[in-house]
Image 1 (tube, rainbow, N blue to C red):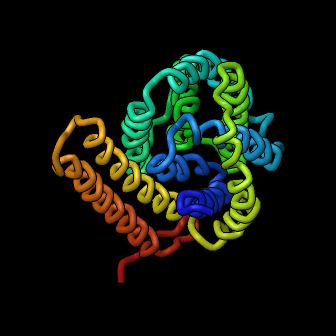
Image 2 (image 1 turned 30 degrees about the vertical axis):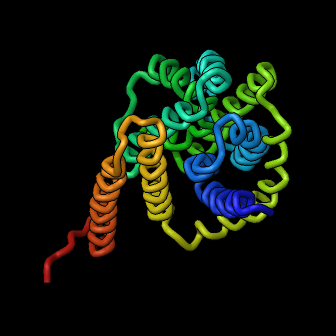
Length: 294
């Protein structure tokens, strides 16, 4: 195997472990790193059929909670279709370099919002879901990533853990299936893309069950936050390089973006772990009792 293939195997193993732990994250980890040496037109058609299978598995495992959430998620799913069509046209027509740029520019604020623990409940789910679904369809079909915005949106809606995973599986199975069909219609599947799949599948077979075991030993929120930190650094690095490659910034000043994102992420990490320590330091008080200072 050449170095790029070895890197892809390693990346997808880590990404599959994250997906097994959180119920999402496979593309969120794979795409930012793999785009450093592949293009969207090669990478996306390899990932989408795999995601159809992966999302089917996630939905099946959490099928008991699906009746509680599918009606609430239906406006998002219906609105995915026009967004997927627009995004597929972009993938097939836009220059690979600019497509990478669009991918990174879109992902970076979404990752940082999730890293910051952004929470704001959506009051009008139906109308907001239609607008959100259309945007999500464009984002997924261009990048194969929807985990960060979905996690931000769904975590604000008061869903239980299994309901959250069922909603994720339902929406992500719909978007990946629609995108798989759209890619086939415009002829994006190529021999180069299909050749990547045999190297990715073993990573999934090992990583998904590994992640399911790992999350039992680590706080889910801590695990998620570390993953977001990794994503932020990778996306900032890739975007800084593209600023030079596309001649938007023709000096090393392009990497000031990486420095800025790094400093912001370090501050967000410090704030997160400081809050965790404060939470751990508060002693437990049974209901109806008060904790008295020493």
